Amino acid sequence: MSIERPATPERGDFIREIVAADLREGRHQTIVTRFPPEPNGYLHIGHAKSICLNFGIARVFGGRCHLRFDDTNPTREEQEYLDAIQADVRWLGFDWGEHLYHASDYFGQLYDWAVHLIRSGKAYVDDLSAEEIRAYRGTLTEPGRASPWRDRSVEESLDLFERMRQGEFPDGARVLRARIDMTSGNINLRDPVLYRILHAPHPRTGDAWCIYPTYDFAHGQSDAIEGVTHSICTLEFEAHRPLYDWLIENLPVPSRPHQYEFARLNLTYTVLSKRVLLRLVMEGLVRGWDDPRMPTISGLRRRGFPAEGIRDFAAMIGVSKNDSVVEIEALEHAVRTVLNRTAPRRFAVLDPLKVVIDNYPEGQVEEIDAVNNPEDPSAGTRKVPFSRELWIERDDFMEEPPPKFFRLAPGREVRLRSAYFVTCTDVVRDARGAIVELRCTYDPATRGGDAPDGRRPKATLHWVSAGQAIRAEVRLFDHLFSRPDPGADGDLFADLNPDSETVLHGALVEPSLAAVEIGETVQFERLGYFTPDRDSTPEGLVFNRTLTLKDTWAKVRALG
Ligand code: ATP
Ligand code: MG
Image (cartoon, rainbow, N blue to C red; front, side, top):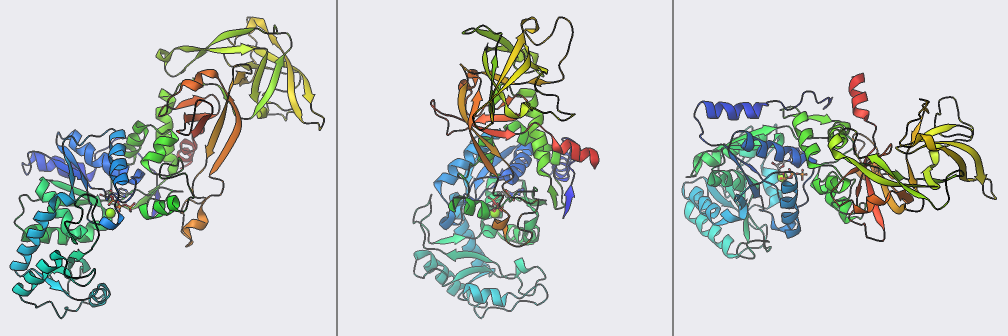
């Protein structure tokens, strides 16, 4: 697989071209797509690509998109996942209207169609074990062998299938298989399993069933029942398409859907597999499915990524038939572009160093007007308290600055954003010699951040007023995995980044930040984008760093 550099913004793709042609040439009047998650985990950014594609096509072509739960495996499915998936699709900005379906809605119909196949000699009950079926199936280079039960009579298969349904046999004792071609070059056509016995209660059908259809048997027929016109899935199902078509052609289904495949999303530094994500959650390696480091939609939301940024990312990478890996920086770039436009600016100091302004009146607090968003004049200004004691960022001061360090140093003047120019006059140390405080003077004529004589300091610093600042916990994140291709050397979990989360306890933030709501993302000036975490309480604010300000992807692209 190659590293892809996503190129142009919102572009037509081969699937949209097929849909457009089908409408133009009258093969369909209305386009119907579906997004078919298995409710066995939370949705991730890969699913977002599929959601944007399926719901996007329905929107652009005036059709509709169904949300259908592919709930054919009761042992792995939970109500929590059903709820989370719906919340995530809605949050992404899509709506299925009244078209919420479940494969389990069709269990009765699917059973009848299985009987139909048996009656027409196209399916049989097989007594081989799962292991034997695998052994008989052959390989890519060897044809399969017929099961000894393949020529069982229609009557006997009908009887056994009925008794499978009645619960007479234990798990794995028998299956229903299609009778297609054991010598087919396509292994999926070598008498695929259609039904298996599973004595497990189902979240929706309870214990009404103890046999469940396979994905292959449920999927296309569900599409046909719902009138889906374009059944869009990822490339690994390409080899299943002949089976999809065989079933549709051999059953009295009410409509004729077609399957189209596109390349799944892969991202550097990221694993998009529910199985792996589930393990991270179960082993307590993250703070749950919505941990801000997780590539889940709920994780990205908790991290502060706006839905618009995720949709823009999907549009930017487009849809193709070639497997590729997209750089995570492309997603971050899309998110930064939205946040730069929308996120209100605020002051926060992550690693505070005290500043005392000797010539500022003791006990005085004034309100400074600070611009909320220089990219958006309509966002207006806010009041920020300023006083004699302030906090600045510790690394904005150096006692012996090297040549390119323009920030605060002894004897040097800098601008405090939106406030005044200050000059450092003295450095206060504790008994061990560590710097604990800076003494400064300010120039009252520079209120608002400009000097009447036109002098311009080389640096502008952010700050908060000590008396009004609020203490906050701030969580900084790095990639969950430490290499761009996690698991390439075999052990995926050995590639987990031990420094993917850093928690700061001593941050001090401007008072207005107490009012930011969960789901809002702000910019801490000069530091990055941050969002309140749901662990916040009135007594203890917690912020997640959504992203730093630096846009590495723009740089990467310039080099490329
Ligand atoms: P996982 O591999 O993470 O377990 P899955 O494919 O088993 O995912 P489903 O719930 O079956 O998960 O997926 C629902 C839909 O989302 C399917 O149509 C699937 O093709 C699509 N999808 C899953 N992963 C990706 C991905 N990485 N990129 C694009 N689409 C995806
Ligand atoms: Mg799947």
